[in-house]
Length: 447
Image (tube, rainbow, N blue to C red):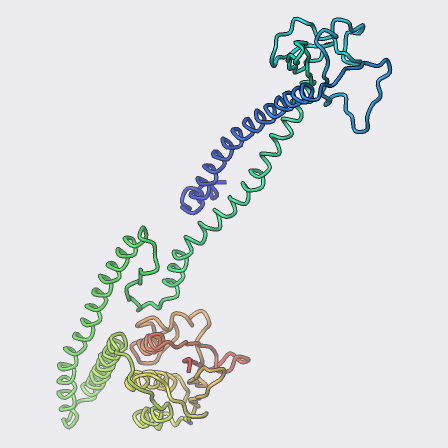
């Protein structure tokens, strides 16, 4: 019940539907009451006119009255709905006191015109007139039947309201739903955007009441874009500034290579070289990450096999050091992506596979296209990664719980950033799912 009340309180569409429905119900009720009363009065007035028409027919035709002892009943005659016409003076001669026989015992004191007279405990509507000879006569009808016919006519007048009211409620509900559809489409469009997509929202198809809210969102997106742009440029500038002193330290450390050092100094010098190498690698990856985030749109297509050859030439010393079996399989593809982005993607994936493959292991790069999607996968036969870490491996600086390899933990983060920005998808898993061994990263781009 609390959830329903909160939904009713915060749902503008539901509140508007209920308010309009109540307003329609109130108007329909008032209109129905007015129509019922009007139709009821009009039915009674119509029956009064029928009495006047019967009186006019009598005076025009000169009908004579005859009250037989046994009165025949015509087909379709109804005692309750019949109209009776007689001389007013004949009522005083009636030997009965009810309306079972003619003439009706109507008192002669009834005034001319329309009035209500009780005959035998039954109310009658009577019209008293004078004919050309000055004889007063009366036209009478039982009031209960008149009222019943009037009520039936009034209820029939309400039938259109009973039919149109639910139809109108459905039309209003459907109209409100359609009017709010642009808001739902706007929400779906925002949900489908990528994380880095901070373009302003197009408000041309939106109602004027929603545009101020959309303009506020656009201004917020603009501020967020400026903030992110500043952060990305700060990372790029910081990495550039760090590259120079690290290069100088590397040159100074290399100067000690020709010097005669003690065993302890030699060990410290090796640790220094490794630290400088890790720092330079971190700076290069930070520059690559900043470049991936600030990348411009591609200007043409790039050959995947050609870029794989360039990457393998750069990484061949690492391959030979671990005596790995590395190769590229599958058909070549042309991707609409910047060369620097594709090179960064392949290099990070292959370097990551080389780092985790065992001595004498296998690293395989596979390419191909299925169902209009270009695929690129890199796999190794290393120990693999536990499934609970598959999502976290894309976080910056995350190196895994059991990872003893060198690295800054930015490689897969750079890959995901570039793939998502270029409209691709990325999946990870075991290279050998049955044995749950090895590691595989599979990328896909729509062709």
